[in-house]
Length: 318
Length: 317
Image (cartoon, rainbow over all chains, first blue to last red; front, side, top):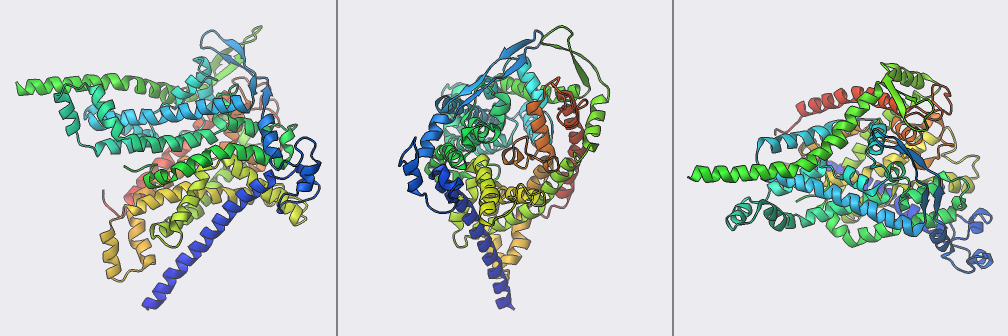
């Protein structure tokens, strides 16, 4: 009887292992396929039909622009990830005004925009829940209890279709298409990260605060000199997770930052939306996508231990 | 004296608290409260261009006109499929996705062969952009398979296989974040309970059903409720699978439709859906009405399911 049970257990884990192996094989197989394609001259794929084989250097030898250079597609992508499009919208609450803001960017400006968007939004989206999490955990009063309940309510409240209203509001208050506007919009505390920081600060002793106050420290310095430094690890983990999310996000910049295209938006536009783009060759598209992926993969390799050990329900653990 | 001191300290703390929460609350009021209220107002408004002016518009009360347009739109052609597609996606994510992520999490939690490695692999979809994964997958199932198997159409261009293929992709990458969070929830189970069960003769399968699942029930509840809340927000990655010209109407989900329309439309769209059912866009007011309609359906369901699941909880608070 117990042998049968043990066999059943082993069988369950063997089945899961097989599925996991297939999952992994597909994941790495696709990434390897992408890297391999990105190293091929486009005629090697389109004329020669070489999809799964290694790059044929004969085709690179014939390439006029990047002769014998296996990284030709990467150089091409660096040079040609560009956006140039007309764009106009109406702003203002009482006095309406048409703004002409052409969508323009090359890889350098798009990278700067990406760093401003991802870096700034990740900072505010991490800082605000930490700030409010600290206040609600350390200051026991009716208002803090109400704020905690409010966050729980907002998290569980499924609201659909607020996008037009958001665009309308951002344009009315002239924050549309600005980084400051996006940073403010992302500086929300009503999300699951609030609960993580709340739980973290709740787990800390209030004795530090009392001792600091006896020593004459102000409420603000107690917060920023004593408690916030203790939350650096959690802050950093949440920041990295959000930075990667914002780095990869192309829909928000497309919708709310049209004339400040991020790399994700520029690559989405040139590889998917722009039908006349020279990135219609799969080889060049793959190279553009790989350039886009490299920074976050490097970041993940550097910080994966910290992310893996800190991750838990809702994002991170104390 | 002591109580006066305490009072002063408490008053100071309350003043500090009050001053500090002003700006975050203002942000919340504007970017959550006003935006959602404005969605409701817009749903009942009609915008018309001002005669002779390049910019600006006149507004009037529209009654339920915008809602009527949405119902007409949903009953036109195959547009109703966006609702069934969203429901199918949600159902598969709930049944297949949740089951698989629980099993994967259990494997990692029990530290079976390669668990640490698989944990990193399962986190990768959170790191690598969906844009990249979609493009690689699209290339494999469309271009590569078409060439290798000499097929007339790739899987994404074939009307018989396109929805299933995209559904598979969404399930495949949907495991990632859930798996990690379930693993963490499982890791917090008290070891002594597990040991006691094993002494009583429980094997890994009975442990999964009688200890692990009941212990992670609150996490499970959260995922099911969040899944319902996101039912009509999920775009099924369609925005990256197809450009707006090549997507077939029967593939769309509500999430995709709302995003795509909001991106291309305006308060007063150049071509309205009312005048041109094939190429026209819903106005922002009509889209808001669509959002209000969905929210009205989904909010009670979401809270009802939450209450129901909580009443079934195998563990106390």
